[in-house]
Length: 612
Image (cartoon, rainbow, N blue to C red; front, side):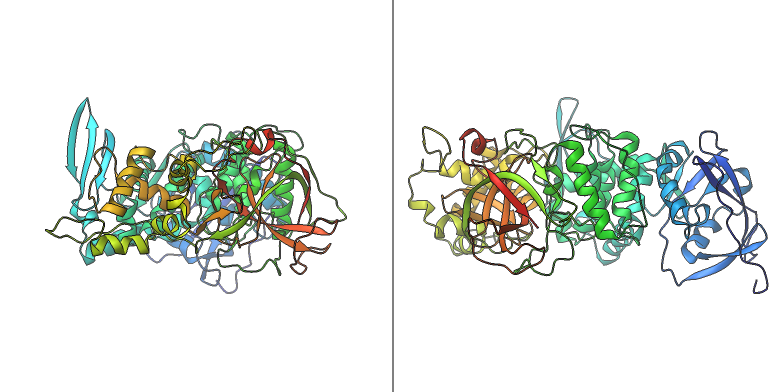
């Protein structure tokens, strides 16, 4: 094909125009040849939208398009190979060929009609997957030791054994599981939109076609009931990505907001970081609603802007539309940060290209109302584009905190022994020093404090139960339904008995469920205690001396770093009440006693807080 003319795209005639590809039939090593036709998205021909991993940009091969050559990546050539013998029956829509990728205005325009493309197609074909057995009924408990699944169906209790290849796989079986779940396809941002908006999503694994719905059920089951098993198999991260592909557009998520979709997209990868926003915007505009208001012009993808500007402008736009600071809940900095200098983007802007896998505490479905549902009061001046001035209350400072917590910190392994365990047994003593839930309780003097001395704002200043506040804080006020059948009091008591007494089984609760809930909330975060003795869970990057603030328009408190200077990125300094004091946003927190609007109703002093 060396002497054949290169293919040149003609401009699309109308905003709703799209191109479709017809792949000419052929077998074996024959040259790939196709044609492109233009149609209106409101009246398209019968077609299939093809989804695949683009692959490395340097791995390309030439094919013929309308008699001229065009370079395509190897992954696309391999995907098209499956259609060569049958493709004359229908058209294909392939983003890499049907969109002129070098034409920025066209890319922007095609993103707007992307939802229609995937809503109208007959099937969205996906590369990758083998199904595992579908389990019906209501799941009660999974025993990670025996592999038994306890569930209820038709009013009867059942015990089923999960396949040994999943619970205790040998080397070849584990490799097979990892080959599936670690496929790059499940980590791509584009897939989020394609799975969610397809009228019929089908997965192709070799020559087997599987509908997407059973995959949804399986991944949801594994993440809600078998998290410890996935950790042991080193599959938690990979299965989690497939799970979030399901929950992004799940019909069981009521009134999902743009923030919900952006949160799902953040854990995925994109060749162009702007697609973390642009693909989410396209899907959100199609079938999602914003939290409170949809005032203003429509959100539009714009590939001409720098990635940091895309993130910053979207953040400001979301604040204006919703009259809330909900989007600031998605700010997650590297947990190992020890300084607020040298940020390339304002600290109050969520970076979609930097993911640290922490669940958002103040997501729109949360029960938290830290600012008592007050609308945001804010100001952002074009003269100072990196600053955001908000109204709020500086409540307290952080006096001590744990290390950055990890997934295995809350586990309570006990060796098998014929001797009954007691609080003095060596395995139980070891748990008391290794588990942060035990260590914080013992080392901070909480065990000797008045059991009803937990602080409360407002009048009268009566204390509440320390024990109740402690158990609730580790699971973020029991705000999530991530772990199936979680029962806070019974499950915590079973956990506590095992932690300090060596009891292997709670009478009415499951220590596994409390462990899984605490792990889900606390991974990559820190447990902290404030100067007023409030308990809290906050970002891994928080430090002693940081401020805890409640901002109007936000459902959760925030940890703030104190920074001096008028410009973004200047040197840190000591706190002062003067005009020069500015703050960097460390991240959202859950502080027991501040989550239901107590700071607002107590009438505490409010001030303008300048975030950089």
